[in-house]
Each structure stands twice: as C-alpha cells, then as structure tokens.
Image 1 (cartoon, rainbow, N blue to C red):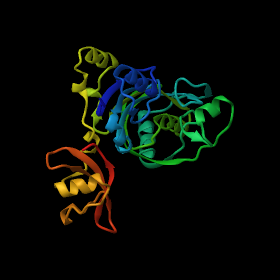
Image 2 (image 1 turned 90 degrees about the vertical axis):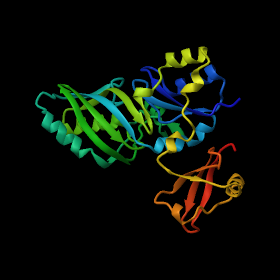
Image 3 (image 1 turned 180 degrees about the vertical axis):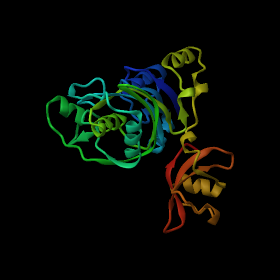
Image 4 (image 1 turned 120 degrees about the vertical axis):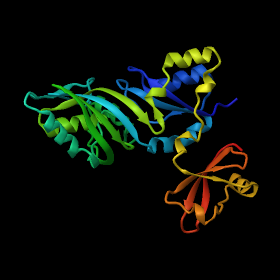
Length: 297
C-alpha cells in the first residue's frame, strides 16, 4: 500500500537530509520518499519529508518561505563558511558593536545577490561543487538573486552573534554568515543553525527520530502525517463538478468562471466530495485552468 503525505521531522545534528530519507525508506518500506530543502549535517530543525503522492508537491514546498536561527562567530572565516571548514582568515572582532551588526543586517536584507558556498551540493558541469573543491579544482560560482525577508539580531555575546533569518528559496545561511564577516572586516563563519520553519511546518510540531520510531513500533505513526495538499493551503481552492473532474483526470483544461481568474498562477482543485484531485495552472491567454499535477481520484 502506498503511503501519501508529509512528515514534519526535527533533523538532529550529524545526519544528512539524504540519510533521513534512507532511514525512513527502511523503516516504512515506502520507495517514493523525498525531502524538501536540504539541511547541512551540522544543521538541525524542520525537514519536511514527503511520501508517495506528497513527493509531487516538493517543488511548491521548497518555494515557500523558511525561517532560521543562526549562530555566527566573528573573527574567523573558513573555506566551507561553517565550523567544519579550514580556517582561511582571522581578524579581531573586539571593536565591533551591536550597532555595527545591526547596520550589517540592514545591508543584507531584501533582494540581494549571493554567491553560494563552493562546498555545496550545487553542480558544475555535472559534478557536485563540494566534490570538485575536495579534489582541488577551483570553480567560480555566479551570484544568485535571493530574497531575505527579515534579519533580526537576537543576541550578541562577542564574538558570537545570534540572528533570526526569514528568507526565500535558494538562500544559503552559510554564505550570509561569511558575507557579513567580510562586510564587518573581521571574517565570520556559521557555527550553529536551526531551521525553525519551512512553508507551513514549524519546529514546535516537528517529530524527533525517536518519536517516529516509537510511533512506528506502536503502529500509530500514520496519525502524524500531514495531507498532501497542506503546503498549498494559501492558494485559492476550487470545487469542481463531475464533468470538470473527468476533464481534469484526462489532462484537459477547464474554465472555473470569472470569479476564479487569479492573481496567482496556481490553484487547488477538489472533487465534489472533498478529495484533493489536482494542482491547476492558469493559462491567462485562454483564461483556462490546465492540470499541472493530477492526483489519484
């Protein structure tokens, strides 16, 4: 029997996101499992893991906002931009004030250009950049536009800064830590990172690996699944009749009436008995909704 849904997991330090997925495949026997948004091994916190039909909404879940609590150490820069790397710069942070840090945070808030860390899973000519870096191959990565919605200074106990970051897809907190260190002139690296929120999933409701294992042993773990459509609940919803339901199932576009002409380009479609059946994409030229992803009817 296929498992469909999403688990909100609190990833522990030391595990890779891939290892969590592999563990869940062994535990459940479900083959179609994927995570939304990689966390580095030193990072902890919210890791949504999608099962079965849930894997088909990963791209939309990854497009959602994320919130992090980051601890940054001033005075040292590393080649990986975090505590696991080789030290490449040292500087004195002794004269840096909280006011200067607040000023740096303001510089990096909003839509910015950010260069990803070379030690990352990004690919260059088919190979992961981190593998190229370990082989001593120099790669120059291009800046990417990212959105940092807010940056808040939570604590400053020199040389450690704790900040809360709300950001969009593709933002590297390691790069943010490194760039802040360069801006302040003393170097910096990411010491600790906790993801507090990913899309609709928050750390307060996230399950530890031991909780999942216990629930599996007691055959209660299915109770912790979130529905496949849970990352999409901010979209407009449309309930369709039997004729449109059949058309959607066959991949045909449908008209939902003038009241459904959207400001956004996607909506959720439900059958008349309340089952989630599809993600629809609005084609503005035709004023029709085209099935982008159809789920089991």
